[in-house]
Amino acid sequence: MNEPRLKDIFEALIEVVSKLNMDETLTLLADHTRALTRSRYAAIGVLDPEHEHRLLDFVTSGVNSRERELIGNLPAGSGLLGAVIESGSAVISDSIADDARAVGFPSNHPAMKHFLGVPIITGERVFGSIYVTDRLDEQPFDQIDVAILETLATGASAVIGNLLLRQALTRAQVEDDRTRIARDLHDDIIQRLFAVGLQLQAALPSLQGADGARFIRQAIEDLDAAIGEIRTTIFELEATHGDSPRAEILDLTSRLCMIAGLEEHVIFSGPIDTLLTNSIKSLALTVLRELLTNVIRHAHAHELRVEIQVSGGLKIVVADDGIGISDDPPIGHGLANLRAKATDHAGSFSIVARPLGGSRATFVVPLE
Image (cartoon, rainbow, N blue to C red; front, side, top):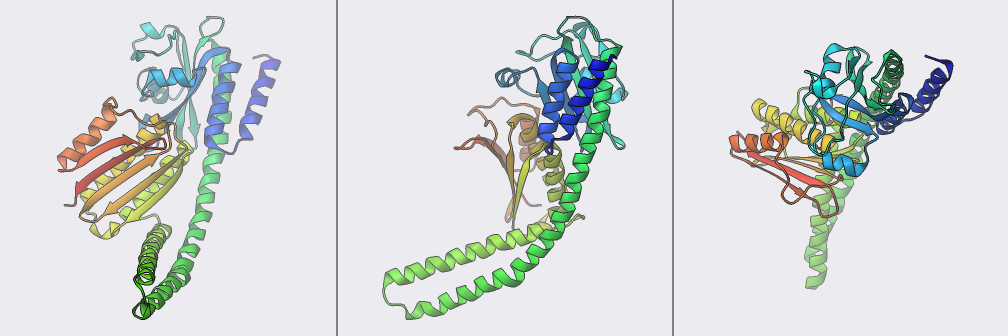
């Protein structure tokens, strides 16, 4: 590798290191990879930490948003992409169409001939892989290209590892703050709201006129609702890592969203830890994982909201601010699996577009 190209790689890694956001880091890394290998297309596949042979996210360079939309579902991590993960080393193909490891392309996918991929290893696990296809000079990829990709992957592993560590440390600090805030909410705010509510109830019999009484009753209802919401917040803040359904749901959501760079909000309603049996808890985690993975892979969202409600049954709602869903969406494996699970448990599953953008998926089953 000549000195100018080494300098370009070094400068690319310096720029990647400067990013504090996982999405920005991966997008910039894909763009630099495409430029440094002089390729038409580049991509970074991020593995699902819950399923080491399935891609959670796929960041591309060289494909515009319209082309990506036409391609449809992101790759699952099989074929040549999976070969990189399984081999743990560089994989080159001089003819994708004739390669026995390839699984073909979906309709509307750009034509591609040459392939090169290397894994990104962080710590003791494979975080994902970097891929490039088709050099601009139409020549097959060579050992110089392999050296460039392996150098980028090595630098990327350090950058990504530091990002994940920083996020984990931040989360630990947040956990301490959450405990303190929960205590303050319970010991101060809720008690003060209770006191206000009692004062309003005491004043109600002495009020003259229907309007005044109606106003006070509405204020009492609003206070009751506020207290309920604060209690939910306290439950969420106090949840720690452990075997409780609440803690496992928070942990799963946090880990998947952290890796994908999504901002998450989790709301609980009802006695989650009391009423969920082990089998229903397992179902809830499986369904939630599938819903979150669908959002991460397909929605191009920045933020999502998870609602877990337990009363007469279990209700899981996942709403995102992504590109939305059509009124009659194609039924892929993910949606079909969710509907089958709901049917098997005498429940229901639906997914609809949200009025202001994004989608809302709802999974409901009775409690066992």
